[in-house]
Structure formats: C-alpha cells, structure tokens
Length: 374
Ligand SMILES: Cc1cc2nc3c(=O)[nH]c(=O)nc-3n(C[C@H](O)[C@H](O)[C@H](O)COP(=O)(O)O)c2cc1C
Ligand SMILES: CCCCC(=O)C(=O)O
Image (cartoon, rainbow, N blue to C red):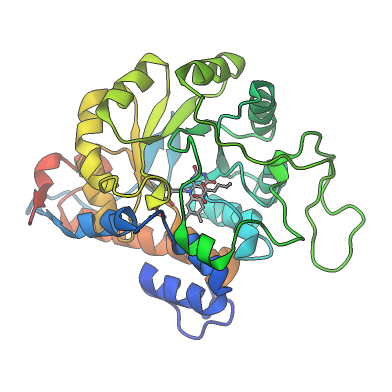
C-alpha cells in the first residue's frame, strides 16, 4: 500500500484500526449488517473473547530459524494459513466489490471463498484476479437442479472446491437489521450468482456506476430446514469438486461429514449470525479435530483478529483459519489495498508469533503450546 488507504490518513497497524476506518466510511446500516449477529450477539462476542482466554507457551532455543507460514490446503500451496471466509455483498463496501477482494487474495497467495451471495458473478471475480485460488460457497437449495447448475458454473469459472454452508436451515434473527429495516440490497446491486440464465458479460447497456447485471431474473436464496445429508450426497455425486462442509460445531456431525465424503470441515458458528449462544469456535475446535482424527483438514472461522489467534487455532488442530469481517473492514476502508493491508498485517503477525514460539512453520505448532488461562 502506498501511504494512505483510500483517503484514510494514518495507515492502520491493527485489524481493529481497520475496523474503525471502515466504520467511519460505511453507511451505519451496512456497518450494522456486517458487524452484527443473531439475538444478543453472545456468540459474536464469545468468538473473540475465547481467543483472549487462551495463552501461548513459547518454546525456547530450538534454533528453528526464520518462520515460513506457508501451508498446503486441499493439495495445493497457500502462502499463509489464513483464507478469506465467504461473506455476502462486497459491493456494499466498495464499488469493485468481490473483484477487489479476489485481487488482494491472489496477491497474498491465499484462497478466497466466494459467497453464493456475491454482488459480482463468480465468472467475473475469477476474470478480475487471474491466478487467484477460489473456492465457491453455497447453500443447498430446495431446487436441487439449480444447486447443481450453480456448482457447475463455479467449477467452469475455475473454483477448486465447493464450500457447503450447513448452519443455516433458516436465516438467523439479526436484530440490528430488523431495527434498521435492512432486508435487501440497494437497487443497483444484485446477487449475480442467483441468475438462472446469466448472460456472457457484465455491464451491458448501462452508464455511470458500473453495473454488473448479467441479465436474467435473480432467484432468492432459500434456506430450507428440510434439507439433509441426502441432499449433500446428491450434490457430491453431481460434481467432481471436493466439498468443504462449513458450519460444523458438534463432533458427531464431524464424524457424519467424514462418512459422507467431505474433503474438509470448517468449524464455524457463522460469526455468531445464526444460532446465538453457540460456544466460541476456538472452544469447539479440539473436539471436532479429535472426531476427525486427522482424516481431513479442519478449518476454523470466527473471531480471528490477530496472528496469535491463528497460532492458537493451528496448535489446537486447524490446518488454516478464515477471516470474515476483517476483510469487509479492509474493503470498506481502502478497497483492494485495504484487504491487502489486512492480509499483510495477519501475515506479519503470524510470522512473528511463529518465530517467538520457536516454530519454523505451522507444522511445528502442537496443542501443548496452548494453555487456558481462565
Ligand atoms: C456480513 C457477513 C456476510 C456473510 N455471508 C456469508 C455467506 O454468504 N455465506 C457463508 O457461508 N457465510 C457467510 N458469513 C459468515 C462467514 O463466512 C464467517 O463464518 C464469519 O464471518 C466468521 O467470523 P468473523 O467475521 O468473526 O471472522 C458472513 C459473515 C458476515 C459478517
Ligand atoms: C442471503 C445472504 C446470506 C449471507 C449470510 O450468510 C450472512 O449474512 O451471514
């Protein structure tokens, strides 16, 4: 980044400062949509607070040398053990939206999970960031044929994996949004992956602000409590892409996920936006990791704001973590450069903390390096 971030005078040195810069720029209604959670937001707070209750016990004089945070994820390298969680509606934060996020992910050498509810079509996200590693998140739809068409569309666009979000049989009750009357995107934005029959190119027949309209009617995203493991099986049978199951919290579901052939599991309470009072993601991780017994990679999201948070998750069994809100804050504060800043800060913090723990790489992190402090 060169000096300032989209007009923000001082360069932020922490993710919290990035959030403050974003908050100053965002419509308060959109800030609330990004920041908020379900019910009393007990889980939103717990995700971050739980990391603070865990301490790190560094090992000394190991002669580990400089740390390299690179990892392997679904058989391919990632430059750092932090990926971008799927979040909806990036064009609420920045006109370039998901394009900017993908470019920053590609430059940092990490994976972006593109949301089904992205405001740029997955093909256009891929085209904007050649070389980006993209995974595609979806909610299983009651129209199974549409789910399969969407999965194939993502595969054709170059996505390497499908992230199926399983924690949303119904939409969470977000009281900030209810109070603010936020229930839809502004008129010029759409969920561009939800078109039944998308055209070939964006921006047809518009002037002024870029319009990503690919034509064709936009379907609503349906959250359906009747969906089950059988629907996941149908999707798996219909696509060659590995499936990452997102939203696993119960160890029994982790075991079932293995039986149903998933390639990876994401421990997630959806950033506290679905069922309130689910325990903090980091506190759920050890039991899920034990249930999978190393058979598949386990990822975690929820409350990761520091490099030390990343280390704690990796030490307790995660292969990588994902960040949701911090990326939106970067995007709102400074577009692509803002997201790049968020990823660069996390990378620097992870490198520093690995070295201070006596580890040359994430592989050196073991559960004995983490101690519950209260
Ligand atoms: C504004 C916002 C939109 C989100 N949209 C999606 C989505 O479309 N699909 C999904 O699976 N998860 C979605 N999530 C959840 C994130 O993927 C992730 O689980 C959560 O944000 C992680 O917590 P963190 O924000 O504390 O990092 C969203 C989260 C936020 C904050
Ligand atoms: C309909 C889009 C769903 C986005 C989402 O998952 C969230 O806001 O948490």
